[in-house]
Length: 227
Image 1 (cartoon, helix red, strand yellow):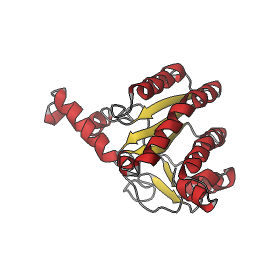
Image 2 (cartoon, one colour):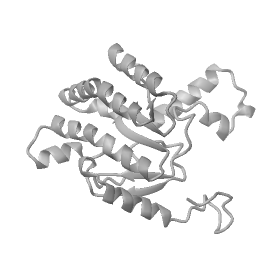
Image 3 (cartoon, one colour):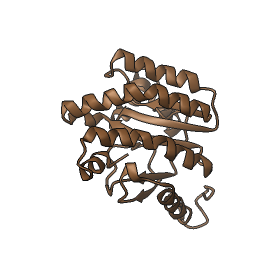
Image 4 (cartoon, one colour):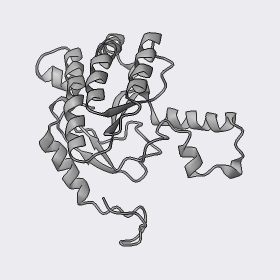
C-alpha cells in the first residue's frame, strides 16, 4: 500500500491525510478484486520496519487503525469477507489487540473472500517465528520439509500469492512474504495506493494472465496449472 505520504504531499496535506485516504481505498480494492474472482487478498499495511518512522506518524497510523477497524470490519463482514491478521500483535496496545481479535472472530465464518491484513509484519520476522515454533515443539530435523515449515507461518491457512502488486513505483520486496513469494508474479505500477482504481487493477490482472508460470521447469513440464 505504497504512496500514501506522497499522495498527501502532492496535495499539500499532512501525511496522516494520506494514510486515512489509503484506509478508505481498502473497501474499493477488495470489492473490485472480489468481483473479478480473486479469493484471497493480502494488504501490507504496516511493517516491522515502520516503527522506525517518526513517532508522530507511527502514533497517527495506530490511531487510524483503532478508529477504522470497527467500521471497516462491519462493512467487510456485510460483504462476506473474512479478516485475518498477519504479524506479531504483541507490540500493539491491548485495546488494539482486542479489536483485531474481535474482527477475526466476527468474520471467521465468511467465505466470499479472505482479506489478510499484514500489520506489524515482516517476512524475516515471520520466518524466525516459524523456526522458534518448530524448535519449541521439538520437531525432529528429519521431519522438517516445506509443508511442515509452511504450517508454522502466519499464512498457514492461505495459499502462496500468485500475483503481488507494488504501487507507488517501488521496485523492491520490502520484506514481504519472503517465503511465500518464491514464485509469485510481480506487477509494478507508478500509481500511488490512494489512486489505485479498477482500470489499473485490470491491467495488473491482464498482465498476470499473460505470464507463463514455469516454477523452474521448461514449458509444458511445470506440473502446475496455468492461471
